[in-house]
Image (cartoon, rainbow, N blue to C red; front, side):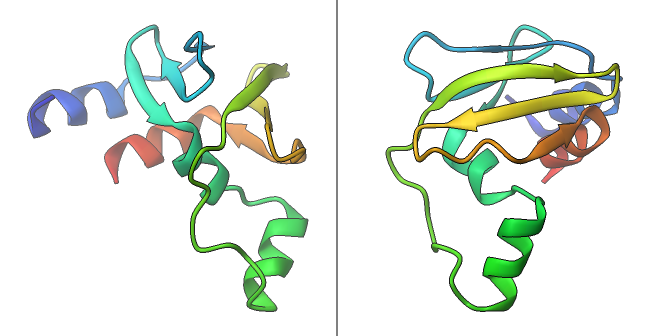
Length: 101
């Protein structure tokens, strides 16, 4: 995907997500992909923030998959990963920001 079309998508309000059959990717608005490993690394829950501060946060999450996605009101989703972590809330605005990076 070229940079200009990625910017257009990232500026579009997000309100839907689906997981690929193998769990490796979250598809936003039906087609814009975010890898499970990237999403897990981007978690901003208190547990992950503390692990980063303490230097205990893993440098990568290779092989991780998304096991479930649940809506969080109208503002975002909760994602459960294969490592058992399911505490992070990913607001649509944050997912849109991740698409821009």
